[in-house]
Length: 125
Length: 488
Image (tube, rainbow over all chains, first blue to last red; front, side):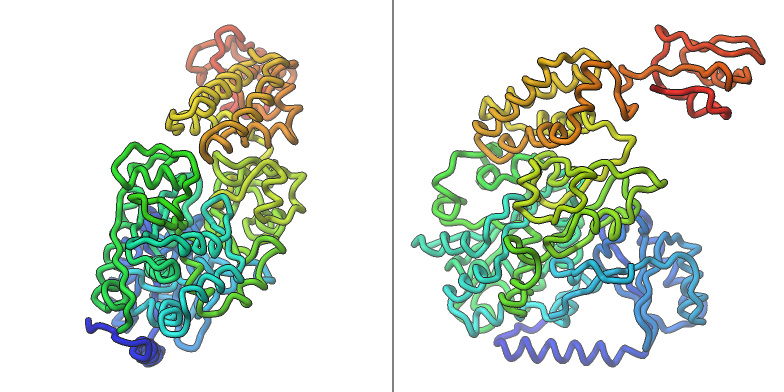
């Protein structure tokens, strides 16, 4: 990783990173919550199951990990963003239900299982 | 929830970015706050901006962050320290862990901003060793930031340098108190010392030191980027911005919520939290952990901010909210928290060391039905005296659970003492399980499940519980299909 030597370089890097993200916008993104609590309730198994299912169905899916999604009651939780659609958060997952999310929602756009309500506004810098 | 009650500032990135990848943080505007400080603002301007924002410490006491930084900036020293207090110890509070695990760079960035503002160049994160994942992600974050030149020497090509390290705590509650925390970091016993001198004058290794909580820090980059005026418009008159609460206990949506200050308890518990599960009636919520107090069903309309909570014998604390429903006994709850503080008192000052023990013993007597009216009076005077005389925040707030529960539920205390009854049916020594004769069909299930064989009666005849032998386990009550056993 190269050093960032000026404020201008930092801003340039941010723009490049945003552009790179934009370029990937055509792909479904699966964001798995992996904080201590999510891992304890099986988040890593969910991630593995979803990767396996996506590979089995030959789907091109971008997997990312993140921290706490704040929905402790519904862990493990996964946020799925299909191209051009609002993100949907699926909760109360296990390996089987997670596979269904890939096979049904990611592949066919059909919502399955428990969707977690997300009633918040997020500050973006 | 049609209307969006929550506003996420401190938790803006948690759950959205990869905490183990610095690029993920930079893409959402990470380190722009620090960049703005270094390139466009003098340290004085940064402090002024923080003062104007109205941000107050999220760790408990609610001291204005900008003022704290201003104090440390005034003192001349070759070394000044920025300390991140990540010693989250309240039972039921986990927002700091969430931020550290979900957005560690925001804390690092804010610490660098603080160092720039006070004229320091060293920082330490004091974190409890029982947060291994948070520690791992912090280490990754620090290494990546150093590689990118966002920590270390000559940050972003400027003259400003800032180094960070991590110190581990053993999980003592008192070490969340800033002077005890500093003592622990220096390798001494985690005991508080008398202020002044305040850490801003002589803290870590006797150098000017600012100690800020994780949640406070995570908000700071957002304030710098979006401006003090933006932040100042959110929240209530005296408490600006948002607060993260950890909802736990008898509540449907257990988890973290971040809401603007000044929101009512009703909105947080009933609307955002979804109310108590199973249609039970909401009774009270313990805010601020063991140092806080109970807000009750009578306080539902109260706007939540620092002043309003203190006026109700509670406090903001770090933002834990343990929700209780009609099945919870307030005396038992107070006893639970006193048990915690009694274990966690460091023992340095007498009011806290002996006072916590005496309060606990009195509460224990009351829950066993051996309390007297005099005990209730003694609890009150003892609590007030401890608040006035204890050395540090732990002792000064330790009687809060007693005072705040008495404020609304003194009748429950009286019921334990005078009627020898526990209205919520929790304190087992005061309970009696009896068979309702006209409902009992004599199925013998209760007698079979009783672990001490204290239920007698022939098949198809009314059964009887031997009160002297009954251990009040409640197994018979759970087993009975005919509602023929009652607890009172």
